Length: 157
Image 1 (tube, one colour):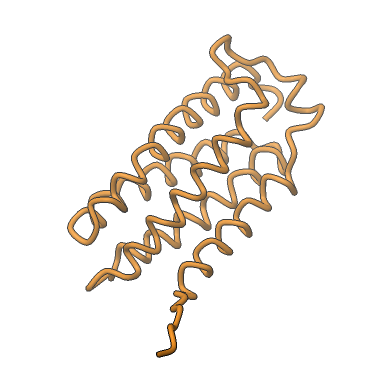
Image 2 (cartoon, helix red, strand yellow):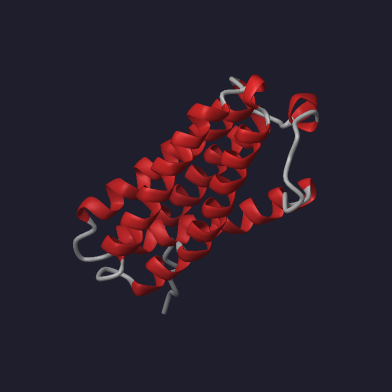
């Protein structure tokens, strides 16, 4: 009797999408410009961003995969993909173009997409919806930070 190991390639695809999305963080490093900005005292330390995003990207990939495998992913999976695109663009707007204003509008859109995904994913997979909650919390913090840094540095972005 021969044992067969089944591998679900769709899970690999979702993780590869996360790797591609993570590349935006590598392409657009904070650098000297960001270091020179005035920031509030509650700004998370720079070393925290990488590990937090790594964990979040794993959770985002699993959530997308769970919804994809659901009976009728429909709009939820489209929202998942759209939030990836907006997420990818934020680093380019903030660090690449140094447009804190456009980045803030982008993070608001991202927040709305994440919240909508949670609502639409919940009936398909409660686990997928719950996996997006820490992401929503982190993007809320990022949005507040983006807004505050923009307001504290009006002439620089």
